[in-house]
Image (cartoon, rainbow, N blue to C red; front, side):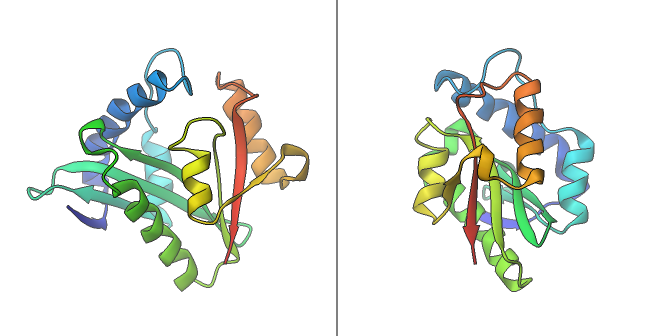
Length: 167
């Protein structure tokens, strides 16, 4: 496996990884309904910020990716997905630490994200990297709006949480 910056030519492959990973989330109870993947404009937004990384196999086929953007002096991790055939091998950790290293190199204040609070490979995983839970009433306006949009899009409000890691 190797990690490299993604390009717009990778978008279709990244969406396929995300759709496959959706089923892992469904089995864990974190999502329901039809599988969905990041829109082209979301992936382009990560790419425009120079914060879209692909995990590739020996043939450079996408098996995972992580994307983010900069907002309010923080790196916001918008998406992390690993294909089910490659999960539980540390690839998600490598992808996130790659983004975090980039955030630190850019002298940002820290990193934020929103995730499911109950699934072991979501909030508990991020906690092992130093992220802490932020209750919605203590979250920034930006994070509260992201959570509200996620809930409007059908995610369970009792499961959604914001997290922050200060550098």
